[in-house]
Amino acid sequence: MKFGALPLTKLVEQFASLPGIGRKTAQRLAFYILTLTKEQAKEFADAILDAHEKIRYCSVCKNYTDREHCEICEDETRDSSLICVVEDAKDVAAFERTREYRGLYHVLGGLISPMDGIGPDQIFVKELLVRVQSGEVREVIMATNPTVEGEATAMYVGRLLKPFGVRVSRLAYGIPVGSDLEYADEVTLFKALENRSEI
Image 1 (tube, rainbow, N blue to C red):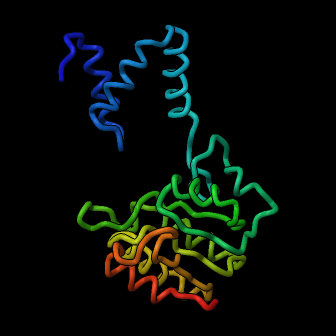
Image 2 (cartoon, rainbow, N blue to C red):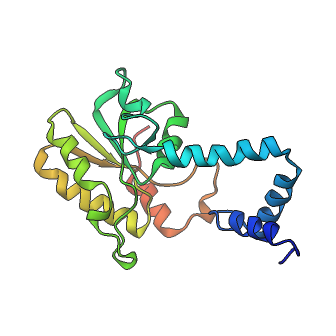
């Protein structure tokens, strides 16, 4: 939908290009931006540019940070013998919200997907192997999503880690809390059975 004013149309298109933002939400955001004062709009734009210029990868785990090492890697109270391998920084944020995991992370920055032209060299696998070679790591938890690419990546990385003598584990998958069995698909039910625990 065109609005007559090219800058407004371009703004809507920029918002609509963001993941998870539909056309209606993009229009709502664009119109909201127009209600801001010039100073507020500048602060918003400056925050985007500032993040884009200053945020980089942690030299250890490849999480986002504005320093050499992220806060998690610098936290000496965390268990450095345990590494949770995730696809991207959003997954780190999800684990941190639980306040239960006290190990370190390794962000792959993607998943192996030959169909999309993404191989092991396009993600941070080598960097993980270097960390494990140090000898301090006793367990690596593969916490990639239960998709074809996530499973393939977990299997590939797991095979590479075997020679180091570390335990390689996979997140358990199954029935979500509060859901009904009748609505679960076959794979979810199978994983729930496979990963059952004693009570």
